[in-house]
Length: 122
Image (cartoon, rainbow, N blue to C red; front, side, top):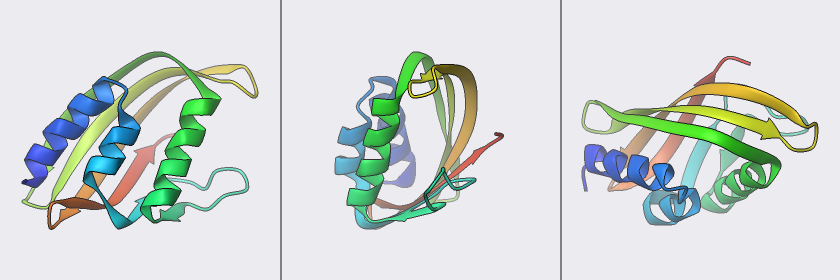
């Protein structure tokens, strides 16, 4: 599959709330995930598919999603694409509601996502 085709399916799966299925289907075993800033007690960079699945699971368990939109993909060459995420969520531990606008850039090699980078204003 091309990066654009992977991006199209990733957007579809994310709109359906199937984030973990997307990771299983498209992420390389040695994927690298880079956040704009380190979470409390964590690192900006998560390596490996199990780490990315764990990070995603933590996010889903700790956020109540009131609304979400996913736009894209926006291809960049043959090996990258960007996706825009817009969320209205409540962070459950603090009962704090916030709106998040986030851009993610995905790098594809040999039909798998090998790197994702997130950009957001906090």
